[in-house]
Amino acid sequence: MDVMGDKVTLFDSGRFALAVDPVEIVDGARDETGAAADEVAELARRRLAAEAGDAEAMSVLGAMLLRRGDLDAAEPHLRAATAAGDRAAANNLGVLLQQRGYPDEAAGWWRIAAVAGSAPAAHALGRHHRERGDEPAAEYWLRQSAEQGHVLGAYALADLLDHRADAGAERWMRIAAERGHREAAYRLARALDRRATEAGSDGGGAEPRAEAEQWYRQAAARGHRRAALHLGAILEGRGELKEAGRWYLTSAKDGEPQAACALGFLLRDAGDTESAAVWWLRAAQDGDGNAANALGALHAERGETQTAERWYRAAMDAGDVNGAYNLALLCAEQGRTAQAEQWYRRAAYAGHREAANALAVLLLQGGDTAGAEPWFSKAAEAGSVDAAFNLGILYAGRDLTAEALRWYERAAAAGHTEAALQVGMARLAAGDEQDAERHLRCAAGGGSAEGAYRLATVLDARRPPVPAHELGESAVHEKTECEEWYERAATQGHRRAQVRVGMLAAARGDVVEAARWYRTAAEAGSRNGAFNLGLLLAREGSEPEAVVWWTRAADAGHGRAALRLALVHARRGELAEGQRWADRAAALGPREVAARATRLRDALREELSA
Image (cartoon, rainbow, N blue to C red; front, side, top):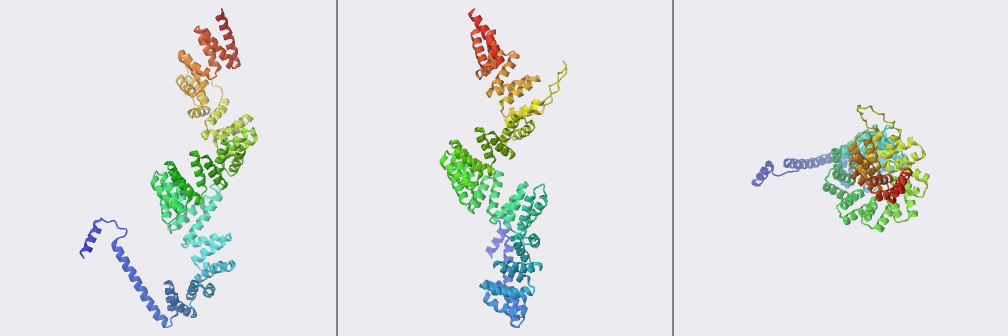
């Protein structure tokens, strides 16, 4: 008693965290004991009534004994009740005989009970006929059961009709779901989900998708782990990550590997990599290839390549072709080209389109153009956007312009930025400015600096001339669309765009902005940027610095810069140096520069020889 008192004191103090209140455990034990005692008493009471010839008591007693697994004791009572016309006893006798391994005799008793109006017996008889391939008889008895309100009969009928692709399947699936059958609720949700996908978001898919979510939710609430998984995916797609995580967790705890994997990705995205790894490990150990791949990628990021390789191999063993592809990527990163090719081939032969594209690139890098082309084609035909673009490059290299353009267009239609640029440039060359602009906008919007620059040049050519302003009138400059695209390309490091932005700034009198962009372009290697920066500096009185930039531009092949240097040295009296730069300018051109440089060179030569 002292010990019990101590325990109670400790429990009440809150120093122990209990899963269940100790009082409830005692009450539960008492209830369980009481229920067992009540059942024994009920058995005794029913036995006495059965011995007195009460058919109902015989039926109930047989059912109780059957439920307890005492088939020998149950059978005589059920047979006696059945002989007295009790249809429930006939049904239960059929169940007993089925358990004993006499299905045909069981079917006979189910038929008697079903004819007498027993819905459970009609359901059992329907299933019996379906197992033997007699679908017409199965449908007849399952329909009898379902029409009497038997939920298992409704579900079994829906399953049979669904197997035959009968339009009436959904009605009975819905009836079963509405009466609490969780598998029916799940399958109804799946059917509605498929219908929504086929209809699309603009074709009436919203309503069935919303109804599907309701049925997923009902099935998940009744403990259906696959429904919980799908519900989690729906919620995650809507951005409701907290609730999605709860359903993934529920499903994962019930043993659903895909839910454990999805929960891992959710945790990883939230920054909890360690917890993500725990769930991926659980899913991978249950045979989920996607989780094994995730673990492989995690270990590869940490530099644990051997462990990563082990998990990629586990993904392959689980039937996930991404395992072979990821293993190939790992080998390629390590310079193990032969092994990379081996794994790329394995994944490509299994239908992995990006592996086929990567294999083609690997073969192309090795000089095997003939071997690369069919893999590019296979990947592109399977929907690989990168492969379609690469195929375009391959054909362009062979001057097969029309074939190259066909693949560029295919890749561009799927959103490939560089492919859209190539199509846009081809359309410009063909004079189709409208279609060119459309593709260049796609390229520029996708982040292509060259696309932004080309689009800007198209728009620039359409601009009306800027009106001259009267003296003393302040010109309010509104940035045009072409300037915005030039600036976008310039900020992405496009040197010609940087020069153009500098020119536009100089045209509106913003010398500081112009110098900034010219200098950026010049430092990145643009000879035009260096030349224009020199002009700006010379105009501002900084000729020595201008000479530095002109020299850089001339050394890079800029004829005008070489002519400027020749003039500067001639003006300084440095005739030999001036003649040298004049010779350089004459060689570089263009024609008018070459002509001026030649006249200057001849004049300097005459002066030197005088």
